[in-house]
Amino acid sequence: MADTATGPGHPAPVAEATGISKRFGATVALRDARISIAAGESHALVGRNGAGKSTLVSILTGLQQPDTGSLRFSGEPAPAAGDIDAWRSRVACVYQRSTVIGDLTVAENLFLNRQSAGAVQPIRWKQLRLRAEELLGEYGVSVDPAARAKDLTVEQRQFVEIARALSFGARFIILDEPTAKLDARGIGRLFDKLRDLQDQGVAFLFISHHLQEVYDLCGTVTVYRDAAHILTAPVADLGHQALVEAMTGESASVAAVAESRSPAARAGSAELLEIDGLTLPGACENLSLSVRSGEVVGLAGAAASGNVRVGEAVAGLHRAEDGRISVGGRSVRTGSVPSALAAGVGLVPEDRHLQGLVNNRSVAENATLTVTDQLGPFGTVLPARTRTFARRMIQDLDIKTPGAATPVSALSGGNQQKVVVARALATDPHVLVAIRPTNGVDVKSKEFLLGRIRQVADAGKAALIVSDELDDLKVCDRVVVMFHGRVVAEFDRGWKDDHLVAAMEGVGTTTASTVSGTDEHGR
Image 1: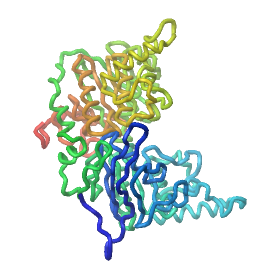
Image 2: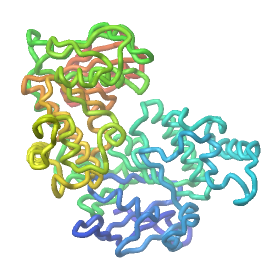
Image 3: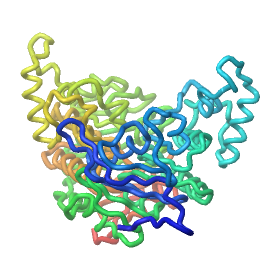
Image 4: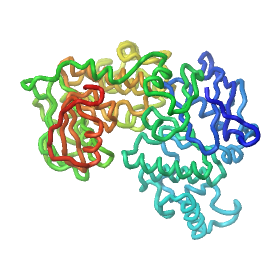
């Protein structure tokens, strides 16, 4: 373990937790856990879903009190529970789901509940905007203070949240999956900004399931597994495989899923999904694509490529201006979810929180939303049938849950995603559309989910994985790349990472080119 020294010449850590334990009933969320973050450091915290990361964050931010252990900031004991102002001056968390209020301006979000000098004093709007402009300028954030937050990009909203945290005096910021909805350029700009702030003494705890980002940004990494601290080490001293093994307790790699693929679909196999001349306003124009029986096809592209909208259109979420979509020779009425379901399309949506789950409902209810017509006669839903159906799906997807009646909100992120996949598979679809299916899940869950998608194709169906994540795409038989609404390249198995990334970024691509080769692993 790499310890942070204190004493003369060695300032106290900006945040230090030791001997932290926390239980929720019979569940041990943390067991004698620890972490230490130095001033000006980017420190990664990684682990599988359920490893204890979220519980640690809730303790570091004062939302939960530990059962045992101590927490200090810059050598001083943590503030008393409920002292919101004191906590804000020491630590802030930028969550994957933005906490800015969309209908308010940037300035109003920055100084929420601080708009005026006193509760009964009027708000001086011009002065508020000037204060916001000065704050944003101080940290190099190029955002209009008068703009509505809902009109900002994801990246800009993150910068606003970081600037707001710094305005309270906090010099320790937790970033929880900050790159989940950013494309490669956005991630690069975010990392540049974080490095600038590090030079000013700001420390970051960086939580991500994208391990390459840990190597790109962080100097130190801490691994949690099964509610306990496993190791802390300099990132440069820890290889990728050693990091994965520390997280999982065993050798694991998504590459294993890619290596276990069945032979590619034969050219003569039936086309299960056919997209012909599809035009979606603001997304794509005259796009054509097909997926055959037995195939997993990747539809890759950066955030502005239009690939997500195309995938959603296949599932009936968007009406086309022109073109047609058919599944197994049956036409799908665009803009109609019932039509897509009836044709045999299953969807794993991009955002499980906003599009995939009903958080106050049980695992069973969420997993069976697409098959309620099978759970009772004359439009009724029989609880016994729901439970039986759900238990079968829980077993099939290896969903870790106390029971089918457990609220889905109580599950870890990886298991929540398995519930979403279970629901998509409940209808036994001819075509499974999976949009960023491993977003925000741990290494083992990622391997399992991609393997399950592979099984769909191996059973004679078809799968379309819409993603910009290279690990997602490595299980595909071929990858079609979109850039600004057009197909710019197609890659057979064996593509090289740099070639695919270049195509997604619009660098050196040729329309509808087909590329194959061998990557650094010999695939």
